[in-house]
Amino acid sequence: MIPLVDLKLQYQLHKAEIDAAMQEAAANAQYILGPNVKALEADLAAYCDCKRGVGVGNCTDGLHLALRALRIGPGDEVITSPFTFVATTEAIGIVGATPVFVDIDPATFNMDPSLIEAAITPRTRVILPVHLYGQPCDMDPIMAIARKHGLRVVEDCAQAIGATYHGRKVGSFGDIGCLSFFPSKNLGCFGDGGMVVTNDEELYGRVEMLRRHGGRVKYHHEEIGLNSRLDELQGAILRVKFRYLEEWTEARRRHAVRYNELLAGTPNLPLPSEIADVRAVYHQYTVRVKDRKAIQATLAEAGVSSFVYYPVPLHLQEVHADRGYERGAFGYAEAAADEVLSLPMFPEMTEEQQQKVARAVRAASHGQ
Ligand SMILES: *Cc1c(COP(=O)(O)O)cnc(C)c1O
Picture 1: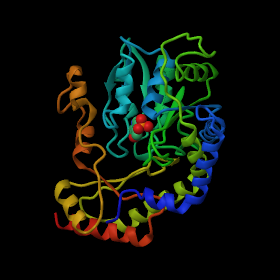
Picture 2: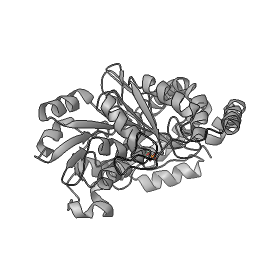
Picture 3: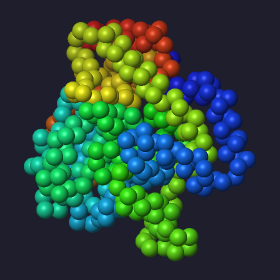
Picture 4: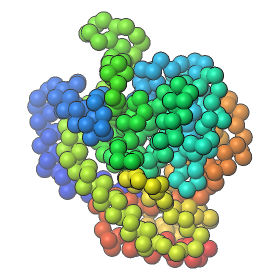
């Protein structure tokens, strides 16, 4: 079976380096906010074209802390995409604010900037774009609208580390960017982990304070905070893996180009597309299909994994039932939820594996 990602293979390929880094961190015994986390914060901030990085427990906490740092709370509205992982709106809900959705651009699966202004109310405080599947959102119009209306911008970069828009890294456009190191993300650790990046010193200070019980000085607490720090052991692992991130990202992009070539012209199979002047990082390679259940079953028989990210748009989730959205509210997000199918995509994929996937996808689509 060709897996969606092959984390066992990735570990085997880099085992010596990773094991050495873990052992060194274990022996060093500075387990909380130790030297690996500090170094990784500096390295990843620079990588993301930002001045500051704060290692946190996971990206969900990162989004939560970003909103807390911006003093977003009850009564405030945050405009975001209905076609994303629930963590995006969970963070909005945790601070007591209200998610307000705008539909996606069906070509990119990302929020359609031309719909944002109509969703702004006197309560709107933040726009929260999600760079889904590693495809950068169209940041110029989003930032222009934010400036015009005095709104803050938090970027959900969980799937898009290293992606660029007009030559600049995602996460550096808004006030704060949030990264995830969940194992299957493009830069994954061996558990949960995340980072907040920013160019704003004040916001950096607030996130840094809030991630460790709301205090800048030990045992002196200014605000209710969180215990949400990136583990030193994860920091050690991530510093090794970070050395390979550019190589892995370029491999993902080559695989996407090859998939595009191998699958071109298949009937009823729209392929992923990029907007102009971006570097997408292909966290997922996601196509659209009509009879998804049947195609997935045929692919499984052929030994090819596939997965649906995400089958239910957030405006139709039970958790957001209080918002009163009904089916039909965001037609493009709903169609995407019905049709998307992600194919195996990981840096270590071989040409033979891709050919096998493409053959199976073509055969399954022609059978429709
Ligand atoms: C994975 C993911 C998150 C949450 O990241 P965690 O580190 O698992 O908390 C948030 N948003 C998106 C779009 C994601 O894919």
